[in-house]
Length: 375
Image 1 (tube, one colour):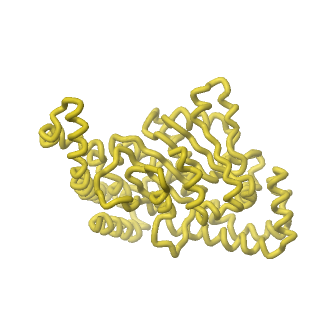
Image 2 (cartoon, helix red, strand yellow; image 1 turned 90 degrees about the horizontal axis):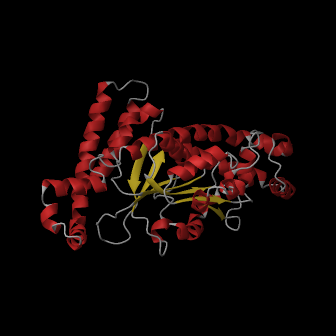
Image 3 (cartoon, one colour; image 1 turned 60 degrees about the vertical axis):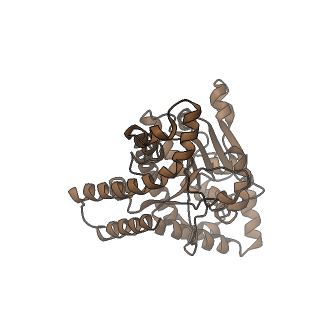
């Protein structure tokens, strides 16, 4: 784990120092070194799972530990747990190909002292983060009773922008909450479905200047991160095992973009389940939701809150978008002629927990208890 941290620090510094220059052939040399080191780390830890795998293989009549000691057995373990793809560490070196300066994974600590790797993986993407936080915002997922997320990783991208977005949310909400009358108007605006630019009080529109720029930047970065995540999944860096993707806010948008990209490449079945919380996307884009459900093999969970006036405000200028996935969910009736896809799509009403957009970070422990039954 210490070697992982050192590798991550080195890659981050290299990206920062090379901010205004082209990598050229050195980029591929650095990426190769990252893959080699990461592959070694995963190979060592994945080897701890060999006894459990051997027991299962023995029951199937495949030679047990004897087979795992051979070249074929080693290749099988490496492929399963991600050695063949170099793990999730080496990928961070090539983020400039997607216009990002930061893109890396950290692993959540295991629930027990056992270091045996699981047969499935979970990748979680935050949409905004607290600059003072020292742990992943998804840490409560590890402590949730009855929730098995396997090997869990948090994907971070452009952390400075995500921290700036969280700060902008806090400043915007605090400014708008100074007037009780204004808060009442905001609530009535959202509940009536009036999210157009002309429906908001002038004072709120002025406050919107605090958040519009970091929000626009975040949206663009999230889409780029989603495409890069698709590259990672197609390369099987997580191993040949099912993966669950969980994200909130623009982190959910990154996942949605990733799944669209996987569908474009006909990479079906790589993702088992996706959980999209407070996602800033059009809920009436039937084609996009169709592709999402076709690409995901098990379940698509859409978490929303009808009270999320901040998300509604941020989309005030999008006249073409009459319904937001993060505010009203998705109408499953769009798949009424396709019952298999209809059963995949699940909407989760979080209105009793989420009063405004920042609650997806502040109340993650409560949200996880609701999401857990789908995992």
